[in-house]
Image (cartoon, rainbow, N blue to C red; front, side, top):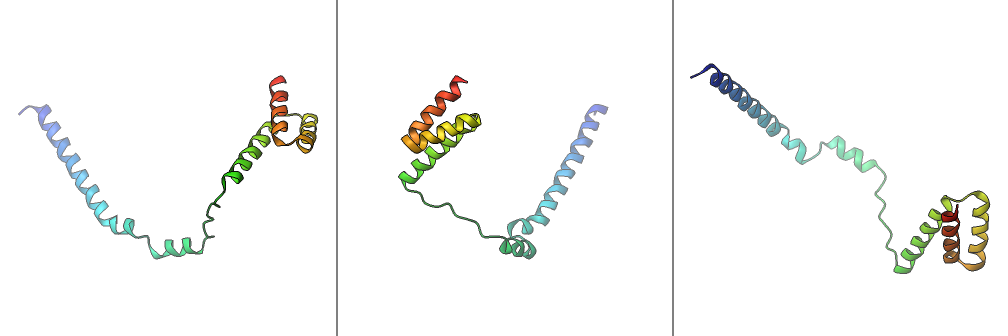
Amino acid sequence: MSRQSTVIARELRQIRASFSRIALSFRRISPYLVSPPPSVIAATASAAPVRRRPKLSQAQRAALKLQGKYMGTMRGLKPSQRSAIKKIRIEKGIRAAIAEAQKLASGS
């Protein structure tokens, strides 16, 4: 057997032994991974309860989308333009305000 093949064989044995040690370590910690320790359970139980998402009707969801679109278009406007758009929203409604805000944003 040549020197190169003995070096490779030795390295492969070391790799195999390393994998065996890693597998043994995983076997030792696996019970802890399946069920968390009591201290972790107590810490999560004392935390604030998870807030569930409200169920929205189609009309509510559409109104939220419009509001988001309105706020997004207002974001890029100057303060004077914003006040003009707010007046349009009061007089003509949110859709007209969004359309005008988009025109102002693309024109500037």
